[in-house]
Image 1 (tube, helix red, strand yellow):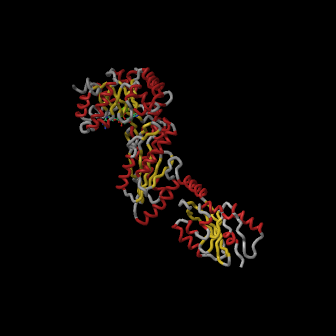
Image 2 (cartoon, rainbow, N blue to C red):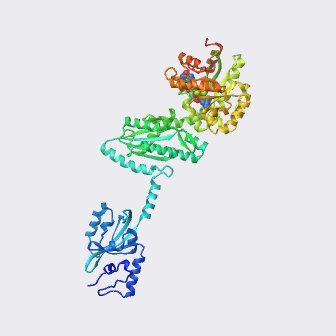
Image 3 (cartoon, rainbow, N blue to C red):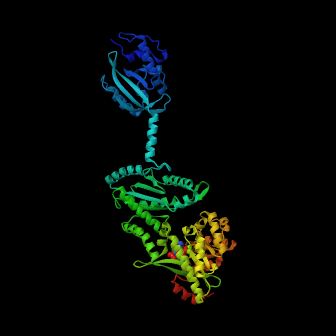
Length: 586
Ligand code: C2E
Ligand code: MG
Ligand code: MG
């Protein structure tokens, strides 16, 4: 009977240096045998012969792969000892199949080394017969490197490189599964669209690497608040999307609140404390759409609505919003037309000195007198104008018109007034802003000291050093500068001292609940004393009640503005009021 190769080689243990004598008839000549042996020894794949439930031969590469010696393996161990337990059933089934000579099987298994560590292998088994009995000749290939590469490729295809969150592709894939389950179980899925407010400012002022780091921090925090079954993905830029199965409107409200809260604490990035806020839009399957495209589009629409109503909040989609989106698109072209056709007007609200009770200034507030829609308030269109760059021509117009009006009143013989004009950040930063201001003063003949520019803290803090130049130039011209909506930004006292700002306007939100909220009271009185110590005038915005006024007076607040004195009025209305001065007694 012819002894097979495996059998012969098995007897010839790797470790015995190949001196084991061949036996049986039909053996190859010595040099061929030596050639076989060195081929087996040099092979870079593991090779084994398996028969009668044991290995009969293993080559050196096989030994290296598994860490067992040839002695430990041959005649003692079987493939079952070298693969993960959960794959035993599969391996046994393979072993029972043998039909000698059948074509080779090729499968991937998890192999176990002597030290217990595992690695992925491909095994190719071919049936053979040795000594008249069936046997298997197999090769084992370590595919760890290929698997790692495959994983990396999958990661690149499925995950966002910057944040490590799933990307749109993986989100879509998971959503298909969620959708199938929701259909079966008649359950709901919330789709949330989250966009960071004014993220561009971070990139613009601190650079892209800080922006990137901030995005990573945001991603980390967001990932922490969602459940394991939820998916949060980065769509690109500063946009994130969430798929949350099993959420109806009430539950989604809770989550949306938590997502907004994620941003309550500032982010510490590269030595900066950054505060960003999110705007969220939510759509719910199946009410707001039955496929991902529709749900995402509707969540996106709702997100824009959240931005429109003041950011840092969430909105659920409602079908009326489609008209709102359309409005937004129309808004831009409408704004251009409105500017060309003089549809903007300024209204004026008195600024009152609390000691004398006299109106010592007015704030110019823009309104859009739309031919069909009527009066549109600035909160609805200023941000569109800012985003589209229209704010520059619009702001220039406001400056010229306000200066013209102030001088016209003076020419009429009305008491001298300060004219306060709001300046948007983009407008303030435009090249040549100082010249625009000088031009408006020159054209109207208004004295520079009568003009007061209202800037927000954010405008001033952004690129503080560059702004300092512009602020100083304006100051040298004699123009007054005031900080609007004070308390909502993050100014530090040390910073404020550097700027030639003469007035602080306490934001309306602190005045609103002055009578009832001790925190607001503390904030307002802190601003008052802080302003005083910096020798600034402090004005309280949004004063609506006599109680608020009394409290502010007690704190030593210098000036006030609000419905208690007057709503913003047309130029004629304002002129009438000025003729009635003084209107506050005592
Ligand atoms: P702001 O500069 O803080 O202006 C004060 C806002 O508070 C005005 O709203 C005013 O009508 C309102 N207000 C005054 N007193 C009270 C009060 O007692 N209670 C309440 N609830 N509100 C009061 P308005 O006119 O709607 O303007 C909103 C914002 O739009 C302004 O806030 C300002 O930031 C911006 N804005 C207005 N006109 C212009 C402009 O010409 N250029 C720029 N860039 N922004 C402008
Ligand atoms: Mg203002
Ligand atoms: Mg304000």
